[in-house]
Amino acid sequence: MTQLDNILYEVTKPARYTGNEWNSIVKDWAKTPMKIALSYPDLYEIGMSNMAVPILYDLLNRQPDILAERAYAPWRDMETAMRQAGIPLFSLESKRPLKEFDIIGFSLGYELTYTNILNMLDLAQIPVLVAERNDSHPLVIAGGSCTLNPEPITDFIDLFVIGDGEEVVLEMTECFRDWQKSTKKAPKEELLRRLAMIPGIYIPSFYRVAYQADGLIKSFTPTILEAKSSIERRIITKLPPPVTKPVVPLIEVIHDRGAIEIQRGCSRGCRFCQAGIIYRPLRVRPQAEIIQAASDLVNSCGYNEISLISLSTSDYPHIDELVAQLSQRYPDLALSLPSLYIDNFSIELMGKLPRHNKTGLTFAPEAGSERLRRSINKDVTEEKLMETAATAFERGWTGLKLYFMIGLPGETPDDIVEIARLVDKVHHLGRQTKGKTPQLRITLSTFVPKPHTPFQWVSQESEEGLNTKTELLKQRLRRKGVRISWQDPKISQLEAVLSRGDRRLGKVIQQAWRLGCTFDSWSEYLNLKNWQRAFQETGLDMDFYARRLRSPDELLPWTHINSGVTTAFLKQEEQRSRDERKTRDCRTEACNACGLEHSQTKCQEKLKS
View 1 (cartoon, rainbow, N blue to C red):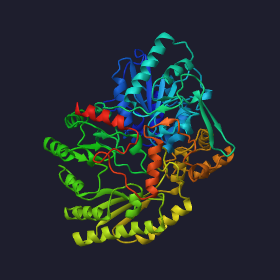
View 2 (view 1 turned 60 degrees about the vertical axis):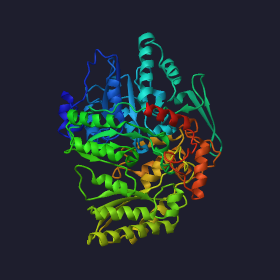
View 3 (view 1 turned 135 degrees about the vertical axis):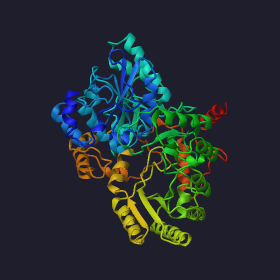
View 4 (view 1 turned 90 degrees about the vertical axis):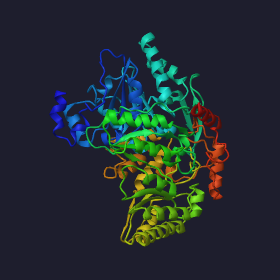
């Protein structure tokens, strides 16, 4: 701490690194056998807004023989100061160097944090390559949505947890506990062999990948008996109790409020949405549990705002009753309802909140034309959008925020013009209804084809094409009351490369990091020239991963990762997209036979019981 005190005055927001937050847990280091560092490869303010880390932090610290502490990527000024002072990356709770922990776990929710993983390991004085570590180094593991294609970072991670982590992490620590007690001096490979037998655990070093002359994958072969040919995603049938004593940050973070996960999964089936696939099936938390959690959060954290988290919050069964009960019990508590569906019910729901401002509502039509919305299975008609907008304006909202995607499969210039036309109609409607200019905020994101989705085989549009479409919209939406923001296509291109890459990308990621790439998700720090140089120096091509159209029969880098949704279903959905045919929501319509029927039935039975 003396060394740390000597540098904290030199950096911005030193509270990012001091720890001692309300509800943080500090156990006796000497008396706790198993030590785990939960790491998030981005800034404290972003990591503290992540929901996975608090769940695991609470779950692990409930075990008497385990201590779990946190670590985040230091900002560049802090990194410089730490390297100059010779201070290795440390945990917030005990200020112990990460290299002294038994296990370092990374939560991976975004591919553009990969270089931060390398930087954190290096700053922790741990070799970044698995091949260069020995039995004295911590076991480095990773979980999160990115691990549904773990191949680009297999050079750096010993072990991946695929799917829901709440059950498998306890099975993993039980295995580690037994290894510590009975065979502590056995090689780490013996531990890995035992861990490989746990469903949902993937250990890349136990597999060999062969490539064809054209760069496509020829084969993917397990090299030991314990390694399974297919890694099944772990799925919990019942949501664990919500975290009601999370660590309260000392500074303002991205989502500076309490959070309760009210359901996990989504059944709407938007074809571009990876989360809609990899978090299936839908699992719902009982209302009584949510209401009690809200009370506990207020009492243990002092929050005056709570967010009800879900991929589609308005789909929660009897969400209006839940909001009414929370509003009645806690009239001074602000409720945040993200991910609302476009309909009048959502407007009525927002109107029932005990505390809310009427400066804006957020909806995501995603595409401008109904033809393209049918193609991506976004079940929103123009009539429904206009009806919802009219209701919002009539009930006092002064503006709307609308999300659209560009570069979607099958998109034409006419679809881009339709975005502008739709915005014009909403803008005109607002002027008619309010008698003054409404405030519309239009956010454009670039479509990125993701693994385990019906669009996993398609190519990404070129940077030139995306820029042309963005410019077209900027020209057509130049008017008072309309603000447009968009994502740099360069960021989306790199995301597409890392999303669908194979394990050969490890050397690219390492070289980009050596060239100075970190915080690539921050537009001010993304250096695409260094990434392009890294590809050139390693003999790989960005377009091979981002823009190449894949054959439906190609062996994909993530083929061995079984999400539970069948390839046959994804191919069927891709064909339905080209046919511009909708697939109905299986909550209210017939089962679509995606492959998770058994899991869905088990979840529903658990919920009823």
